Amino acid sequence: MTSLFSKFEGLAGALGSVVAAGGRNPFAVVIEKPVSSTVGIIEGRETLLFGTNNYLGLSQSERAIKAAQAAAETCGVGTTGSRIANGTQSLHRHLERKIADFFKRRDAMVFSTGYQANLGMISALAGKDDYLILDADSHASIYDGSRLSAAQVIRFRHNSPDDLYKRLKRLDAPNSAKLIVVEGIYSMTGNVAPMAEFAAVKRETGAYLMVDEAHSFGVLGEHGRGAAEAEGVEADVDFVVGTFSKSLGTVGGYCVSDHPELELVRLNCRPYMFTASLPPEVIAATGAALEDMIAQPELRRQLMDNAAHLHAGFTKLGLNASKRVSPVIAVTLETVEQAIPMWNRLLELGVYVNLSLPPATPDSRPLLRCSVMATHTAAQIDQALAIFGQAAVECGVPLQPEAA
Image (cartoon, rainbow, N blue to C red; front, side, top):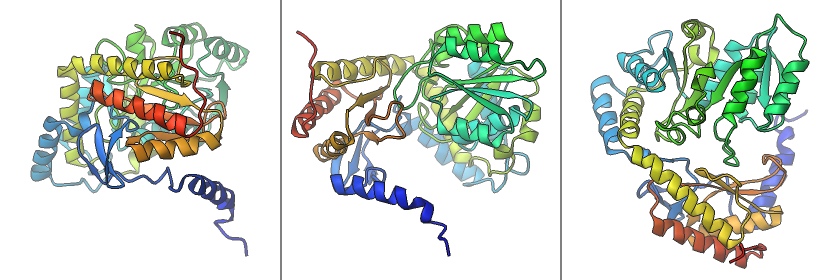
C-alpha cells in the first residue's frame, strides 16, 4: 500500500542533510524567552535577533500590552466564531475604521492572518473569466490565492514594468477583468517595487492593481503607508493588502479599498467567512500598536538609519548584500555548503538570522536573510557585523571588501 507520506521522502532526505551539515534544524529554532524586541534567549544564550520582521520593535509595545490585558479582562480571550457569524465585535469594526482612516480609504476588512488576506482577496476578486498577472517573485500566499481562484494566471519578470506591459498588451480579452498583484517590499531580498511605473502600466491597460504592503507598511512613505505612498501613486492602487505581524508586532491581516463593493467581498471570501475572527486582545493590541506607529514617526526614520548602517557594514566586510537599502537585507552566498555552516556559526556566536535555501530562493543561491529594527542600537548592529565577519572567515566564505 502506498504511504501518504511517501511524497515527503525527498524532503526528509534534504532536511537530514541540512541537519547533518550543521548539527541543528535551522527551521525549528525556539526563542525560549524574549528579553526585549532585539534580544532573545536561544539555546540558553542571549542572542541578537536579526531575523524577526519586528521592524518597529512594537511586539513589546507597552501601550499594546496594556490594551490587550484590558480587552481580555472585559471581552474574554476569543470570539468563537467567524466574522459573518458571531465573530464581529465592536472592537473589530473600530479597528477596521482606524485602518481605513490611516490609509485614507473608504473601507477595510480585517483577516485572522496576513496569509488569509491575500488568499481571501485574490480568490474572491478573480473569477474564471478573469486574469491574474503576478510578479514572478510573489509570496506563497499570493500564489495560493491564485490557485484558490478560477482565474487564468500570468507571471511577469520580477519588478519589470516593461514585461508586465507586454504581457497585458498581448491579452486579447476585452471582456475579462485583469488584476495585477505586486508587493511593496519583497520579503526574501528586500527589493522595492517600482510602484510609479507599475501604476502607469495599470492606467494604460485598464487593469486593477493590488499591492501587498506586508513588509513596507510602517516602513516606507511619509506616513508609513507603504511603497505606493512613497512614490505618490496611492490613487492608482485599488486594493492594499498587508499584515499586522511585521511593523505592528501582533498578528492578522487587512485589505483597504475605495471600492464600495468591498462590503460584498465579505460575503464571497471563504478565508474570511469560514475562519474564527481574531480574539479581542489581539484586536486591541493591534489598534494600540497602530497608534504607537502614528505617534512615533521617528521609529521609521531610525529604522531606515539602522538599515543603512547594517547594509554599509556588510558592504565594508565584502559580503554580497542586497543592492537596495531596506529593512530586509539578504546576504547571498554561492553554495549551500557555505551557507549552512555559516548560519550555524552565527547562532553559536549570538546572532539569529533566517537561512533560506534553494529552490526557495530567487536565483537558486542560498541566502542569510537579515531584518533590522528601529530598536536595534548602533552597538548591537556593530556587534552583529563583527560576528558576521568572524563567522565568514571561520567558514571559508570569500570576502571582497570595498576599496578604501
